[in-house]
Length: 270
Ligand SMILES: [Zn+2]
Image (cartoon, rainbow, N blue to C red; front, side):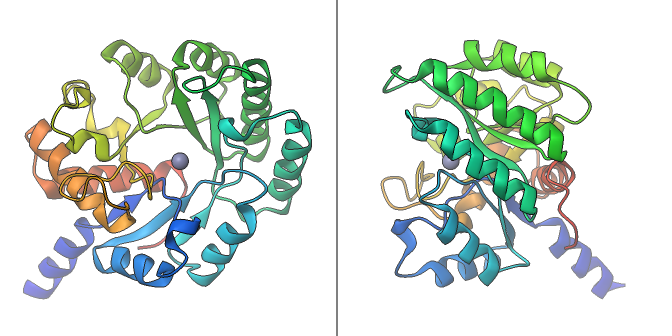
């Protein structure tokens, strides 16, 4: 049955980009080509995390243009949490009530550049976790210099309806263990391909069923395109490097992470 074998081989190679901002300005001139390049590279499913009220329209337009491939999330990004964050959260809630979103994201806490809105970020994060539980949607969590703040909040809010992924995971082995104890997954991105990155040592010991892949395009471009604009077609470089680090085949890591992503985000088809 060579045809069937060929068919299942191709299916097994499919990859999911669980975190990509292809609706941003960086892609305004070639957005369609970038999505088509991803589909041609077997990245047929792309999940779009929102940033704030200024990105909703472009994100939704992209999802409407590629309804089989691009799935939007709804949320307020921690670096967009300012004085008026309650107004933004009202918009998030209003749009979640309309449905059509695959997850609540991206949400979280970012204390890397600026701690001015630390308390507001914590409040916005907790409120959005509650919204995710209410709508029974997974969450995409942005953690930057903030694991100590994020972990206890997720733990407190944890129930059977709360699940999700720590996107762009760059934490320690101990943090990975805590995330697994929560039943959450970790997103592996382009940083794993960087020469001096130590995240590979941590990812090596994380069981495959806790991992998903992401580009975070246009940011964090993997080698060999580091320094250029990132795009979803580049997931394969992240998958290749992860397979090497873990001593498994590309097919194996692709199959497991795609299954993980489909299960977490309840993606049907393909
Ligand atoms: Zn992001």
